[in-house]
Image (cartoon, rainbow, N blue to C red; front, top):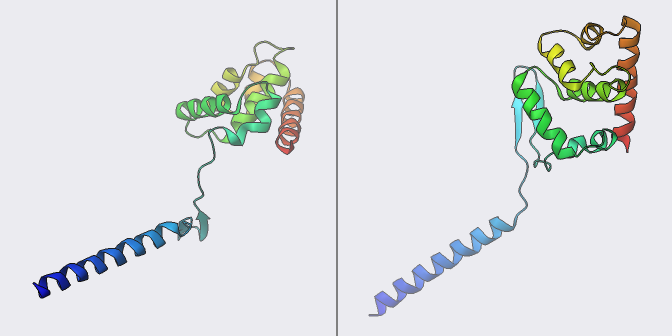
Length: 152
């Protein structure tokens, strides 16, 4: 009987230590994993994901929409054109916002289609009826507006 009770006590101690150890490990803050890319020599750190659309907050306000709607539209456009960057997407939206009142053929969808076909932003805008100088000015203004919106 005495051997059996010491076995139970030993088992209880081991279980108690295991629980205490797992509780202590669970209370430690998690560190973000780091991945190293040998081909380029660059390192990147994986961070906790931001809420959907948070990277579009300032631009969305300027465009009278929500960050979530911008994020959703970007993901849809990215699926249609895998080479589309976030910057080109924002520029297409900003240019369309700035020019659509004067030229109704200039829409975000029309610009994104031009980019998808391999044209530059300037080539796309010229194809939609702008002169080369006006296209360049529209790109500059969109860049200024985007930078100002992101600072807010």
